[in-house]
Image (tube, rainbow, N blue to C red; front, side, top):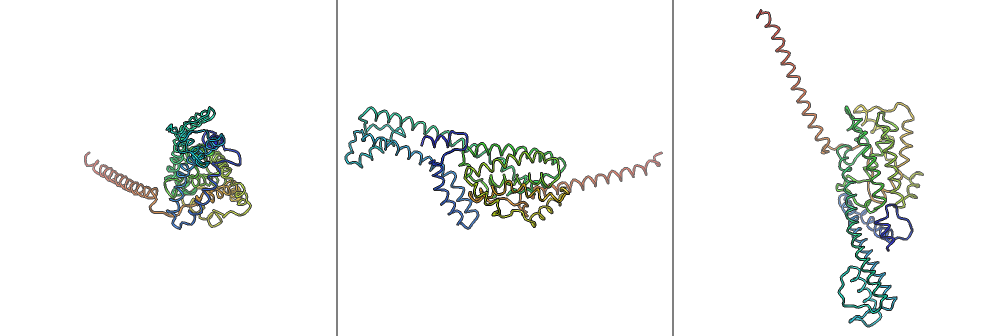
Length: 389
């Protein structure tokens, strides 16, 4: 129990060992929970049901740890022959109930004093358990804020991606929205920030895998879809699309892929990822999707690599991460993003962009009208000038 709590809360790396209370707890609870969630028909209801699991599993895990500690110390007391004076004692079962009662009141430092230990060894164990209880409460108080701070940092960049790549995010939309004068520099900055985001995910979610179960506030967003969308965009920039952002895309791709694969190791999805790599995965792009992707990017004038091997390079890069992403998607019930966004007239970017284009059109007309007025005034001045002389 102590080792399990240490590995889960304090140890800053992926826990090792086959038998761990935390691993057993999530194995027992996540399977039935996800099975029920998959049977729900409505997407909103299904996501809502999934979103409950992360917070409630944290509370239940703390309860399990407390129960294990109480039962463990009770067994120690029972092994010493229940050395307590209890007015309600009597039978063997009553003695074990007394041991549980003493263990519970000691762990939570109630100190009622109605049951008295009769040996020095029992007193020593009571003191030891009370100290364990204080440490347990302190760990819980420190553990929960750390989790929610890491969750909050993760979600900030995911929320910012909404305006930069759509909701859900797609690689094509990310590149389209950064195709403007100075857009390459902005894209490099964005990719650099997501390289750091991936490193933070690797550090925090390996230490606290429970964060992977926490869903984003909006149904169209998730840490997995955001990471895969960035990997898609990086794969396009490296293999297909010409531009100065390809160097930073390589760095971001390497970091995000590293984080994705390590997430698969945490949930023991290596075997499933291997099966998908050998031909069991559903093609997220396909030839029809690739044609739509080229059409979408070509509409805004994004240049493609001219060689025929570009599609081969893109396929090779996709094989480096898509099987791992698909395995985690199946396990967590998180959908993967497409490559091209579906038309959505209510998208905030579309609405605001339309208003901006209308405003620019009005300004262009006003400037043209002002130039015409100046031309007429200049022409009139040239006509009137000889009469003045």
